[in-house]
Structure formats: C-alpha cells, structure tokens
Image (spheres, rainbow, N blue to C red):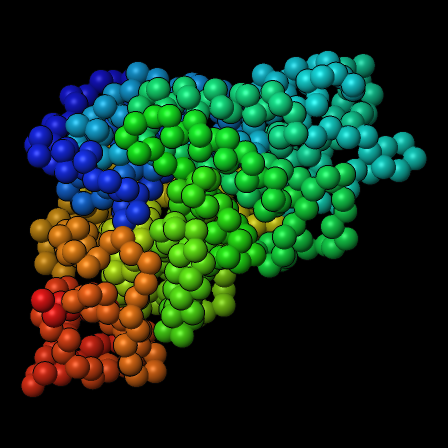
Length: 560
C-alpha cells in the first residue's frame, strides 16, 4: 500500500481531555466507519485502513469521541468481512497489521478512541478450523468446534432441524465427505460460508479470549460484538415449529438467539477487559424481543453498552418516541448502564430515506420517498437523539444527510442476502455506497480509481467539501450540535428526562436548564420560548415569549 503522511496530532490539551474523562463511554458519541466505503488510499476502488487514517482529523473536527471500525480482518468477503478467516490478520484489501497499528496510534494522538468489530458467532468456511473439520470427516474432534449433525430422512437428506438462515433458506448445509459421499450437515445462521461456532466446546472460548488479548495489546479501546445475542444455542437444537421465522425475530426468544448462556461468556470477557487500563469497553449488537432483555447484556459485570434497535426502528412519531425513550431509560437504570441511541448503520436504510417514506415499511426500503421531507426529519431526529441521556452512534455519511442509493442496478449489487432469494430484502448496498469528500473527481474524493459501488450523479453536492463552512448545511449542523453537546453540562450522561406538557405530536423534555422540543407533525406549532436558543434543525421565529417551530424541526434551548 502507498504510504501517506501521518495526520497531525491534536494539541496536548485535547488529548488529555479525552484520556482523563472517567466513564467516557457513558456519554460518548461513537462514529461508525465502514472501511470499504470511507476512503481509498491506493486507488483500487476499495476503502482501506490507510484511507481511514488520513481522514482521522476530519472525525476529530466533527467532534466525535470514538471510531468504530466494521471488520477489516482477513476474509473471503462472502459477507463483506463478517466471514472471518483470520482474526489476527488484516485483509490485504484493507492493508496490513502495520496499517492498523498506525491508525490506532494516530487516533490516540488526536484524542480519538478505536473500537473494532468482533465476530464470535461464526467464522468463514475458510477458517483453518473449519477446513480441518471438513477434511477429517465425521466423528473428528475438529467437527465438535462447530455444529455438525447427521441429517433426517431415510438417507440423511433432510436438515437436522427446521431453523432458517437470516439470509433466507435453511440454516443448514450438507457437506460432501472426503470419500465423496453426501454426509453431515453444518449450522449457519447466516450465509453457508459462515458456519456457526459451537460455544459449548472449550477451545472456542480459549481462542476468543486469546483474540481479545491480541487486539487489546495492539491498543484498541473496545469491541463491538457482532451477533452478541447468538453464540449459544438451546440444548438439543430443538425445532422451532414455524416457517417464515424472520418475522418472529425481535418478538420472541428464539432457540438460536438471546439464550441465557451467552451471559456467562460475557462475564469471562469482562474480567479480561478490566485487566487493561484506559477504560476499554464492549458494545453488544444484541437483537432481543424487548429493551428489558437487552438490559441483561449490560449488567455491571458484563458489557458496557448495547445497541438500541428498538429506538432505531421507531417511526417519526411523538407518542412512539416518548414510549421507547421511557422504556429504554427505565430498563437501563436498574443495571446502571447508559442508554444508547442510533438512527442508521450499515445494515439498514439510512434514516434520511426511511423518514422520507410512510411509516410501516421497515428498516430496509427501496423507495426514495420525499427527499426534502426525509432530510428535514433526519436533521430533527439527530438533534433529538443527541439531546437524550447516554451515548449516541453516528453512521458515516449521515452527517452529510446522505440518502440511501435506492436505484443501484441489480448487476452491481453485492449484498449476499440479495442473492439468496429469500430472508432479508438484500438492499443493504444502498447505505454502503462510498461517501463523497469532494465536489468532483472519479469518486468524489473517495479515491483515485472509482468506487466498488457506483455513486449517484449529484453526490458531489452532498460532499464534505460542498458542505464545509456552508451555513445551514447538515454537516455544519452536526459539528455545531456535537460541540454544544460537549460544552453543555446538562447534556450527555444521565438516566432520565423530565417531560414537559406539549401539543399533540410534539416531544418536549427538560434536563436541568436544557430544554429539547421536537415537532414531529407536518404543521408549525406555537410553543413557549424556553430560554435562549442553542441550536435548531430548521428556521424558527420568536416573538413576545413565544416560538413558532416549523414542521419536523427540533430546537435546543437553555434557561441558563
């Protein structure tokens, strides 16, 4: 890879401010980088770690506290790196371990923390353990590290149970044994190239404790745990007795998800993390039926944070928002964990597009909707999110107001779910299109050699270059919001809000001297002027102690 100059370190005072913050994760704003779509340093059309490193000053200036990197490990890329072939190596498309080391060091010099993805539910089918399990055949100790089972039916031609893959079709694939005969089946809750580990086998736990230490010794500040609700399966792998199982996800405890046994694993991991200085953290990607079950993952001796998917899936509706905010804070308070808030990520349609469409279409949408409406709501939703107690997540490009790219031709799509013909909609490519940095260029500043997914015409007008210094731009709104959030004592960490009386369709709450009002209706509303305006997502007018708040607009006030 071509080497570029290191980013200039931040002033010493800025570094000290971050490193000395106790419990930094309780109010952190964490920025998700999807490496292949962030910045390309060598012109091959694919983002890489060196590209991320050169853009770290941008993230510092944006005002985030930490950077979460989606997987960059050695991988055949059957699921964009979530099929790991070597957990201690960087895939050549992203660089080398030296690049990872340089990125971590530069981030720390700039006062940023680095969180990396960990994928413990499954490996790649090219992982050495799995290749050995196939080669050694039935009954080998290597197969015990995965879920191999004989099939049902007269000749074992049917899957061992009725579980379905998240990507569609059976969650089982039959192997051809070394002698060429049809043989056992192995479990994969995702793609066939992602066989599930058997966490009942002690070697699996030993391996992942070693992997944790490897990256902690490299200096990472934490781990985002992929499919944190997986790993442990119900004893005996019982049939679920239902088809279209995806419709049940998020509503019921499944025999393959959210089993109580996962918590023993996390208690072991927490003891390892606590051996290291610097307040390293775990973040759970845990899809659970309720936010109350999510709270189980963040008890004091387990993980630090868990993604709030219930909030991500909430419509732009005042009553729904108040309900999920209350339930989240009520669930986290007894375990002493911070709430988290998130609007977009690499698996769902960007919220600027979700909010551009009618409610009820889900989190994967292939409709552009009303672009102006979506952006207006997205900006308002961001200010609401950043005003809530706890930690917030920002997905790369949302600070530019990027919409999903909903018209990608079928022939360029790369989401594996798209090719399965069932299961997820397979439209995740739309939120993964490389982000624009400049108005012009072969890939709007992403790199010198195009981009792995085509960028739409007009992408340059949404770029960092186009929005920087532009009054009222979405990028400047984010920069100002994050600066105000950091400098306002009543924002950030906490476990409660005080709701204020407000007209129907309006969310209003107080935190000390700070007041947040979000108008989720399609009409302007008149409200009391709660003090001095700190920030607003749209233009408001104030006369005689009254404020006129436009449709789909959030306002921050202070009474101090």
